[in-house]
Length: 150
Image (cartoon, rainbow, N blue to C red; front, side, top):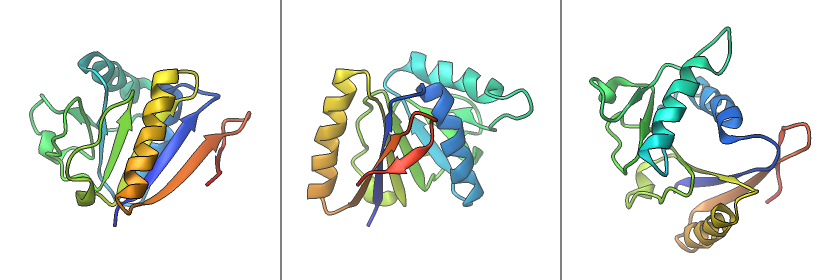
């Protein structure tokens, strides 16, 4: 059964929080796909992952670029999984793919200051729980650490 995680952003932006979670995913030996709510957001994250730290970057590619199937992290606006990722990140209210069971983990990241994203996360929590998936809720502390709340 797919483990479904909800990350409630309250202190940092997606651009600040996502790289750390992607690094942890890669450290576990998993590939990741990040599904965005729009092509523009995909392209902005593409730039960010190359420049998020002065001393590091996250190797990745986008769905429309050559060799998408060999990328450790793939950015997409659709439901495809050409790099055979084990973990799928859904950001900006992106809807989950029909094949949720194909993933070890499904990670919903949502902005706590955006009412539409909050409502979408609540809806997905109910949907994923009803589908029988193990769900967990993580929230940021004021020092930007993650604490499991449920």
